[in-house]
Amino acid sequence: MTQTARQLRSTHRQANLLAQEAWMAKEKGQFDRSLDLYQKAYQLEKEVAQGYLELLDAEPTRSIILRSAAVLAKECGELREAEKWLSHALSGNPSEEIAAELRVLFKEINKKHRKATGTVKVEKGILRVVEGILGMVDSTKHRIGVDAADGRVRIQVPQEANDMVLKFIDNPVKVTYQVEGRRKWLKQIQKAG
Image (cartoon, rainbow, N blue to C red; front, top):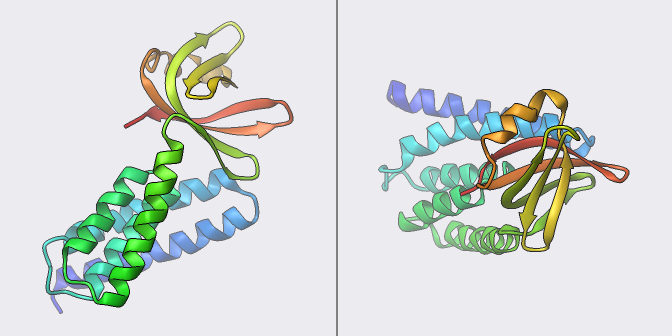
């Protein structure tokens, strides 16, 4: 085993440990912490997956690593990236059993991706994601309005984030927010696409 292969396996183990921690945090209702841990795990697994992309003869490890990257991308809400990892995995030489699993996962992610585009989707309990155009920023009331397919979603913005959201005005965005009673609080905003 080369040093590079050892490093990839070590990084893969680190990603798995973070993913397990993220899953436990999600089960406890610690959604912000869970998302943060999933994102860290995905960044590590992404490095590993990129190392295996060209290693078509490294089956079944290659397919398993790429599937893992797809699952972590899905947990981070990066559905398009998840689809890409699965496509790469299927373009190699996975066993029929693994290929069948990859196809099932691809269909699930593809279905979720179609639903997510321009609509509100409930992740678990009180954490939600909306994609649309950031059509309104009200700095005095600390609110934004995301124009989605189902209408405008108004979200409260922490005062210190007012200036940050202005750069997204009139652009497609993906917004993660938390519902507390009747209020929706901004957790994350990023460019959609």
